[in-house]
Length: 145
Image (cartoon, rainbow, N blue to C red; front, side):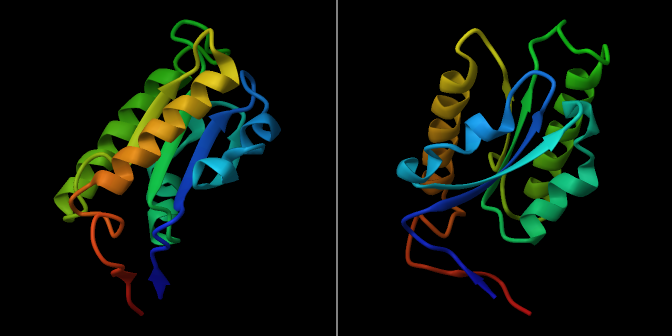
């Protein structure tokens, strides 16, 4: 059984290791109230729907996918595939009753790691404020076995 910890939000982050150093993302996120698990991929287009949904099954409160800049993908359309998969999982979460907004795609910009950390902090705040979130009220059980 996973019971939400009101102080911290668990986020799984899939990132393109070709455009961002995963180790840089892991540094300093504890201070932001985020338990961050970074999953590096050779391309964000490899973030399969199965992997994204498995993150929620294993207790993630939110899932983020960091892609390279539009037009800068080494594999031409990887970031476009990632965007479609993020949208599909977000729609699936709404369909099963968890609501939209627990999936986010972050496109790497000129701000680099600082920009990604800022967007993760904004994402954490949205998750905590979500009406269907365990963080919005008293602690609630998210998954029973």
